[in-house]
Image (cartoon, rainbow over all chains, first blue to last red; front, side):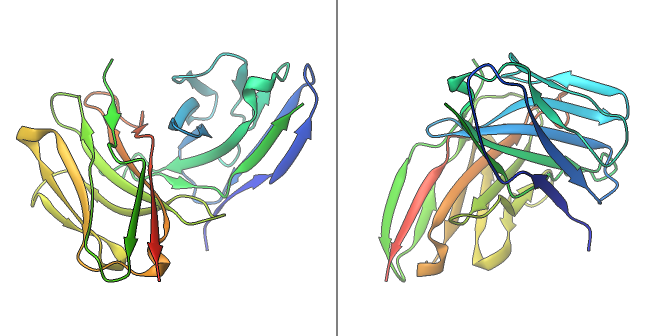
Length: 114
Length: 114
């Protein structure tokens, strides 16, 4: 079955370190997204991609970057981790050919920045 | 700022009680609407979605939602909740002319007492 996976599932890091969160999907979806989930805010879009070599900033992109070198993967990089980036991160993908634009979510990565 | 509002932050019900969770959005024009559920420790799953047609949408697990355009609302309902419905529920909107930029409400935590 097609799926979307994230790794690691849990990560503890220190302020100032670079951190990369992996997202891999086997749906063959062109669209991929990164969200962060914080209490009281729901999910907020960080970055998204409509295909290989395409990346776009979302609502809360400061301090984050993504790159898309193939269809399956969209890694999220925190260039210099800050305590404010402690959160749960969700990756999602969708097929632009589906009118309803349903997004399918990964299991999440809980990141703690000390 | 345009937004998605979920007015109830935490709802506590007894089993067999009826459920209605509110969702309002402030975007004009044609929108795509979704309800996602997140069970404890799990990732988001799609409950139901609306993009056109019958404004009463049936989803999985006995949930339904009604789109009322004049009220900018998309409330989620279930006639009789079960303990297993304990979860966090998120309303989401894809605004017009902004495909795939999904905006989420802050979420409503539902606790069902056995």
